[in-house]
Image (cartoon, rainbow, N blue to C red; front, side, top):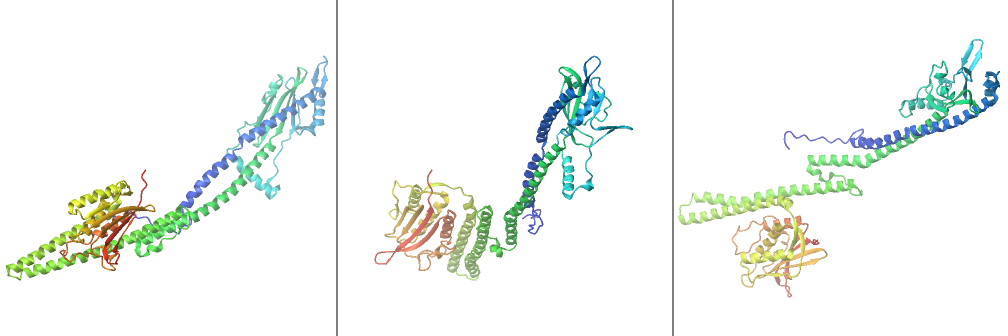
Amino acid sequence: MGPDTVTPMIRTKRYISPITLRILAVNLAALMILAFGLLYTGQYERGLIKQAQTSLLTEGRLLSAALAGGGTRANIKGDPILVKDLSLYMLRKLSDRNPLRTIVFAKNGKLLLDSNQLVGPGGAIEMVPLDPPYNSLSPEEKISYILQKALNLIPTRIRLPEYPRKLSNITNYPGMYEALRGNESTGAWYDQNGHILLTASLPVQNLKNVLGAVMVQRSGRQIEQAVHKVQETVIDLFLWALLTTLLLSVYLTETIGIPILRLAAAAERVEKSLLLKDSIPDFSYRMDEIGVLSAGLRRMTTALYERINSIGSFAADVAHEIKNPLASLKSAVETFSMVGDPAQQKKLMAIITDDVERLDRLITDISAASRLDSEINRAPKTIINLAVFIRKIVEREIKNLKLQGKLFLDIPKNCNFFVSGNETQLGQVIANIIQNAASFIPQNGGKITVSCQTQQEKIIIHLDNNGPPVTEGKLETIFERFYSERPPAERFGTHSGLGLSISRQIIRAHKGAIFARNLTAENDRPAGVRFTIILPAEMKK
């Protein structure tokens, strides 16, 4: 780790974890969009206004017909004209059934009457409906009132024009001038208190003769209440959904965020002390990604621990193996300076040369073994036909080791055995075992047989030789690093004892196994040694 590298500290104790905030943000974002969409009741409000306008226009036509029939009197010429007293009588007669504000203009555009005006000695007084006092409301009504005021601040209502406040003549009344020309019209407005006001302007006519104009007005508070009721229902649903979202977010945090933080904290403890390799929490019982992550971290930690132990053991073995030739070399060099006999000096020089060669061989093999791990992981793997591949290796070793008549291949020519692996590494394993067997078999009558077969999706390779058996109890030891059990006639130090160890390492990297056992004849006499390699079979596509 370089000096500029910063390792983030893992904190497991937080009031709110970042993943909780992200889960809440995602859930609330979708919920807020849905809630805002539901609160936007403009289309619903527009439909209610349209229905109310249609109903108001129908009532206005009935009122217009009533005024044309019962609110008129013939003038001097005999033509019917609207009369204020008769019109007022008709309005009062219909007021119980139609709680509407009715405004009537004569044909000449003069205001005839207004149902919201009271005429007294001091002049006309207009009656304006007011909201009930806030203090007189019940607690539930106060909550509803405050909620309605808050909802009115949300830009969800449809836009309506303000109803004109200066109504000095007929031209200021919406649609009334057109009504005197025989046209009907409706309108929707906001009054001075911000409430919806619906209007309908109609002509009062006898047949096609326009006698005046009438405007009927109705408050749209029922529409507002209906819209507010829908919005309140949406808010209730939103609050329940919000509570559910919070609970689900907490649940997700408990099942996702906290286990991840525990795994991260355990990984940090392992980083500080590898003696805590078993401190990774086991969530493998969970059939989800957390369980997979937990199992993967535990396997990784175990593999890392084994690798570190292996490196430490390898370093100790290397130091031990190098000390032997170094001690011999040191002794020979010290003795050389004290011996004057040329014959003795020649013997000492031969010892020095052997020790140097042995050191060189050890260092070369150790270097190759230390690179093996990275080479195994980086080496590309392909589909290999073992029948063809082993045949090539056998032919090569017969030529290189001069094993003609001693090395045999027992694989039918038409058989195919496919595995996934690296040709160089697998070839090194088979060649190592053949070369090892070649140094043990007798000069006369020596025999090495390589065979291959399939069994339950596995490919089994046997390498048999008729050399001396492995010492009892050493069938596993021979695969350890630097262990070497050589024939008596072979010069000491010729082999480093890493060949079989490297072979097992390669086979395990290919998810296989390798082991050895002694062969016996029918009379229970030793018949040689069998090395067995098991590799997973690969289906040829």
